[in-house]
Image 1 (tube, one colour):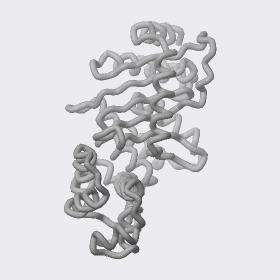
Image 2 (cartoon, rainbow, N blue to C red):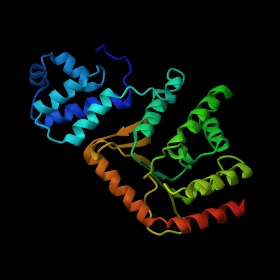
Image 3 (cartoon, helix red, strand yellow):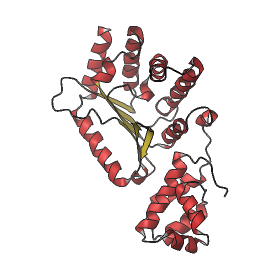
Image 4 (tube, rainbow, N blue to C red):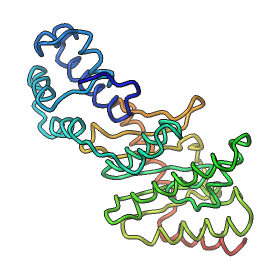
Length: 283
């Protein structure tokens, strides 16, 4: 298969998982390449996501690595055989690659769990809220650039609003609900949207109130997306250099525990809705 110039996060993840299987088997890249009948250069390209890999090769590699986890192997095969070109592809070349990677992650996710501290989660944002946010963070952007990002964000909502929505949990700090990213009317509309979405059976919204003592989780913002098997989960965090995709098992387990802790400190969904109703009335 020809080398890729810009592999997607999903393609990079497939290569990383194949590398982890090889390392767990105690094999060097040269040894794995010899067993596959290829060379170390191509093996390196496969493990970095630069080169594609066929289903047959994935299964051969798994056998060479003595991997007996059938569910994981099938999930890796699905990652290499799925040729889905979703709606996000129309933005390739016009928006940063992270936008497409996030949309693709959403599309393949089995569930999504968000923690938001400063801003309302992207999947719950209204157009006015998203537009005000993008315009403020990027004051040099012309309106057309802002509009493109808003459009993309609105389309991402399909994962919780479409015909086959995924289970969605979010914990939002009261600060994110009170900060008026846009004007008073837009802020009220944003709160009402959160309330509306929270009524869906597959959505759970909880709020961490200002009044809570012993909450040191201001830096806990994250998006946790469920893979076909837990090993293929991904945590997404905003970082100073851009979007960070976290997939090492130790880090994933850390963020699983962190989400459970933050969720455990939040108000119940019923009390959360009452608080959001009250905040909306105050506007």
